[in-house]
Image (cartoon, rainbow, N blue to C red; front, side, top):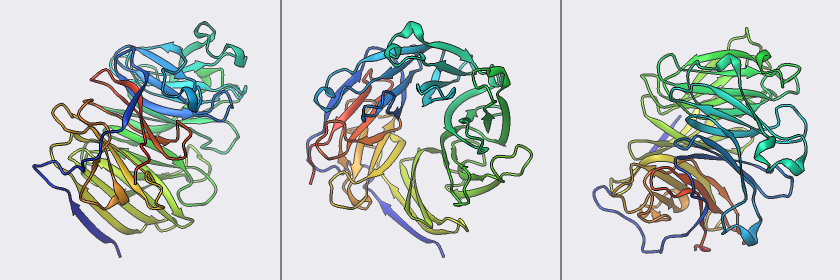
Length: 392
């Protein structure tokens, strides 16, 4: 039996505590349209590095983490490719040479997915001239591609790509890696589901049967909501992928976060554009919902863009961080909700920033607590992070 809880945050007046905003540190603010942050340790030094697509500037950049002592300064960067309208970029070692490549998804008139091949030698990783950029023929010019997530979908030991788009005839599906991944013409496209506008794609074994399933959020059209596509058996292209509605049917679902509380339970937090955060807890095997919670917040914030869960104040309880877009006149575009239940959200960013994006919780300054990594598209804040002030 599903248990439904609604927590109403104050509407019409901002209900922020008086705590000062967190210190903001700029990783790169030199271009326009920073659109997402994705992580990987590309040089195996123990620190997470970043890739970001700059939509308006038409560049895809990798930022190498300089370590805690230098994290507050701009990070060393390399432009790995120049493509029009990059909406998303993600790391994956597609050719299995030990170097992290980058895959960018492009919308606008570009409508293509690109592989940016990393140099074979690690010493050349930050040399832009040694990177090579190629479109994937199966998807070139086919749709406004919005998000890509790597994963071995068919269990053959090679990294495949799950890709989603938006607009007319938008789909979500997977690209099957060939025996020789460098031969992009041989990558095979398997469309799975018609959608309106994909936001989040997570690849994980949702039913615990040993293969990778797909969790995604569909932002637009009548079938908007959060769905799981269940792998029929290691991604057989002719097999039937069962679609399961997780929640938020009919809502404009933005970015979401997912955690496994225990072996048989999943929890999903979703940012709903109409200033809501919804949480769904469900069983692994049956996908039966055991709890649904809804938090609403007022128009002194922007509209909800992303949510991420983590223990910010080190009290052993889960907190939520929310980022917003359309925060032109808002008093806070990024804020956090202690213990995921308080009626007093606390400001992180203050009023600076208009359109924030997905976030990562990561200890960048090495002091033992979680900082917030994100980017901002409209106020030229670029790729940035907020330093956790050891909150209590």
